[in-house]
Length: 149
Image 1 (cartoon, rainbow, N blue to C red):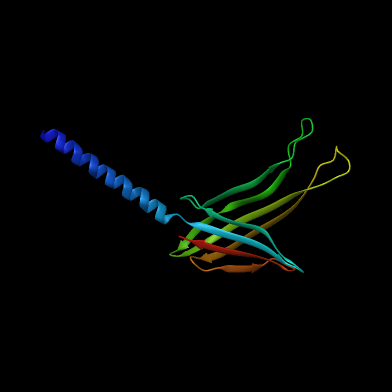
Image 2 (tube, one colour):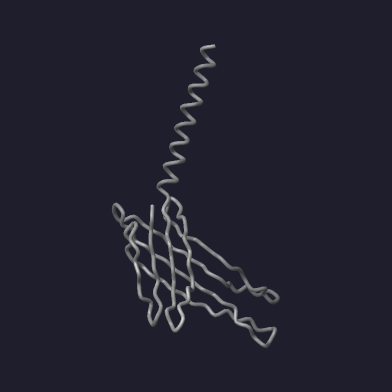
């Protein structure tokens, strides 16, 4: 009987310990919000994503797909790709290194021709937790970044 009570108590303690670790990892998870906007005659949001980062701060996101390749050629990527990392500098301050690629397929009269027009934005900056950072990207374009714990 004593062995059973000890087993139940040990199981409860292990469960509490695992649950505490699971919840603390969830609370420590960082989110990065990215908004890329063109404010020309009409405001257009070119990309908008909120990404949950892994424990090592790696960013690896793809939304979209690929063109159907001809013969042995590789496919062309379309959609949004975001890669990079977020590195802690000190409490509530991070160094962001981000590459944002937007690829749009262009219609072509010739069926044998495939065109993907891509725009690539690479940036490195410091981000403070809970504070939006708005960075001009030339012309009427800007990118807005925010990191939250």
